[in-house]
Length: 271
Image 1 (cartoon, rainbow, N blue to C red):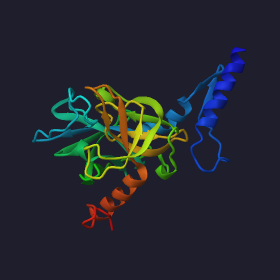
Image 2: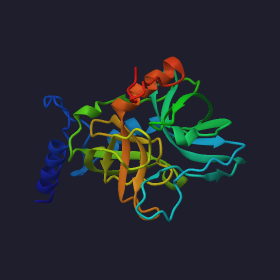
Image 3: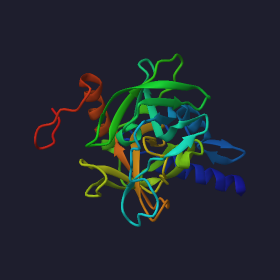
């Protein structure tokens, strides 16, 4: 009976996790070990591409990630000092999407005011990073590292998301080390939150804490479908998390890579 229940639970997870339009594509990411379903095989593939970002800055750049803000939406950046260098502060997370070019996506507020940027990988490597550019209006930034054998993550299509789809949030909450939380897509196209100038957020109940800024929101195929950026809650209680849809991030990042900035007309539409 126990084995039968485990098989039923696994079947539900697989069926419910299929968020793509093409239902014929299998979901080979939930494995059974001794009759227990697990996301461990998927996470082994994708977590190496999620990095921690530290910055050194001569200026004290403020963010709205502090505690005690009641129900005001706040960015999920951290500010803990790194012991090896008292001037280096661990600010947030990032996601490596192009191993050949060393391209990493993160939030603009994570690297704001940075004179030096350091990226820490799950395998223990710490590499200097170069700022490619950032867009304050959407809170998207691109940085670059130079190294061999870099990990990467597959890019999904955030336009195919539906409320109820299962998602995982990966980042460096409270700057204690890489952490994974899980939940569902709670809502789409959230705006008027007062976090950014241009808002079209994915809302999720996967916990997003200070330090998760710039980290990955992924679907159960292991595809990147959002960049975590903020949360709504009392103090550090995550309550409600928000991520920038990856399709929006890619449009911004492509312009940053090509031009070093984002071109918009007066209505805010990119061209």
